[in-house]
Length: 250
Image (cartoon, rainbow, N blue to C red; front, top):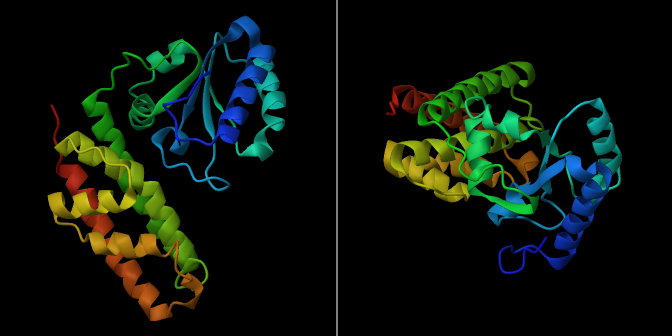
């Protein structure tokens, strides 16, 4: 594995990736076909001591024996910034582009091959499948935001968390909507909000204010301000759902 000149990761992080990859090679031997790094570290927005390291592992088969070996390997590294890897077979990836178009397109666009063959090279993601998942994600998450509010109401301690966590969960679908409809590829949240405002007339400021709660001491915000922000936020999410509902792709 050599990320020199390709990855902005610190040498210490690259060392961890190499160690985990070697552990997987030792445990799976010929069964191991590929190891990929994806997520924030591959996109270039990895934050030391905060961001996770995400791996995708391709094996010849994924049964209980392979999962047991994977568990043993992961337990050695889970306190070193890793989350549990995704385990696939090559066949499962090739036949699941209609099930995970957003996730697979993200990985295809931003990953580093740490070992083996690249299972995403040449993988085609259907535009209609991508549109359907964008719609399902946006509308489904909107329903869950409403449900969460019904559970907690105007709880000054919990409402900021609902706002920030829900907006984080909407970001992948927002990015894919822009790419699918306008051919715009953006990663940073602030740029996503700007493009939604520019292209669809959404109030990007509402999204920016919610995003800003990550940095503010939200527990000190007046309850009426939180209520007002939540109301504006919900309106924009409804408009976002209308945008994706009307989108037609060839």
